[in-house]
Image (cartoon, rainbow, N blue to C red; front, side, top):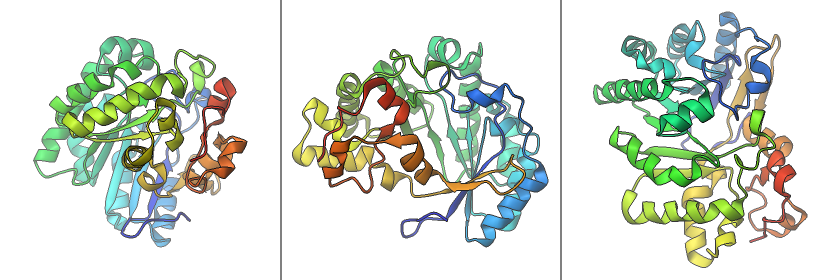
Length: 327
C-alpha cells in the first residue's frame, strides 16, 4: 500500500481499459488501444473497490483510456459512493461532458472531482495536432461550462482541475492557456512535461530539452507570483532544471517547493488494472521512479535524491542526463 502525508485520504485509482474517443499523439495508452482491449468487467471493478475500501482507501479515481466512455461508469461511481468513498474523481479528456444530462448523472451518482486532460486553448492545436478529433475543443469547452455550473450549484466539492501535457507545440502558449481557461472558471492547473511516448516518442519537436523550455516555464512561475495568482504546478521536471536558467539560492528553493515538488503534490497512490483477470496492483509513484524514470550518476550527490524522480527514460534516450546537476 502507498505512503501518505498526514491528513490525506488513502487513494486507489481504477484503470478501466485503454479504449478512448480521442487519439492523442503522445498517449501512454496509444500502443495498446488498437488491440481493442476489453473493458474491465463491472464485477471486477466492484471487487477492487471493495478490496481497497477494506484496506482503508477513502478516495478513488477512475482512469482509462477514457473513463467517461466506460459503459458502467455511472454505476461504478454509485457503487463507490455506496461503499463509503468520500472523494470520487474522474480523469477525463472532457469530450463527452458536453452532454449536460450526462454530467448531471455523474454528480448525482456521487462524483466529487474532475480532472480534465485538455492540452491547448486553440482548436488548431488541440483538435488537429494532438487529439485528432475535429470540433473537439468546442465540446470540451461546453463540458467545462457544464461542470462549472454544477460546482456553483453545490456539486463537485473536491473541485475541477486541468491536467495538460506540456510539449513543444503548447510550451509557448502557457500564459494564454491559463488566461483562457481562467475566464471559464478554472484556476487549478497541473502542466505535465511530456513523457516521450506513442507516435512522438522520438520527435524532439514535441519534447524540447529543459535547456530550451525552462526559460518560459520560469517566466510563467514568476508571472503567476506577480499577476496571474493561479494554482499552478509542473510535473516531470526535476528541481535542478531551475539552475539551467540561473535560478538559485532562496528563489530557487521557493519556486521548486511551490511548483515542482512532485513528492509533495502526489502522495503515493495505489493503482488497480481492473482489466486483468487476477490482481494487478501497484503503487504508481514507485513504478515511475524505479521503472520508468532514471537519473544520472551525478544525482547521487544531490540532497533531493530521495524524493526526486529524475527524468523519463525516454527523455534520457533523447537528451541524456547531462542537464541534471546535484543540489
